[in-house]
Image 1 (cartoon, rainbow, N blue to C red):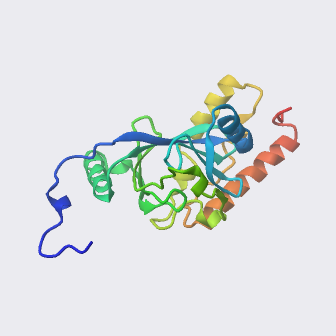
Image 2: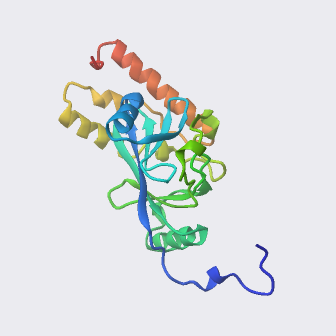
Length: 231
């Protein structure tokens, strides 16, 4: 609606961002198909959208996704996502976080294509990522929603800043590898931890090239007998 003769109410709201709920989480998985099978066949989730075997978005509510998966050589928790009312609340949350620590910003402000939501990602005190989001697609009637497999160019965002390298390759990848080794000592995860190249990811194409390169190197290690494939 066009606002005439009055100022936006949002400029007078001086409160801080107040997340309404934990909306979704994203996990990296070395076997995205097995993870999807577990979520759909065991836990009863529904697939909302996928992208070229790299991303999957699944739901157990009317939200477009409650769990998202990304295919990666190592399993790890990527981010939690917290729903706020609108873009103004995302901005206020960002302002408050960055006033205390300007280095917390990771990626944003932008809008995802899959899910359609506005986003801004931050680094939490444990080194994981946390996202403020608003305006996520809703699916009240599953019969009216068509789950599609999208081109990789749609997998990350509709608009926003360039994707930073450490969004797709976490800074603590060595620690993640060490944690995997602790529970699966037969895996030479010290090799897997160095699969990706630390480069600035300037586009979705760069991101997809990095992921493809990681998986090529992982496959080479498996072929050479360095990792035991799943039986």
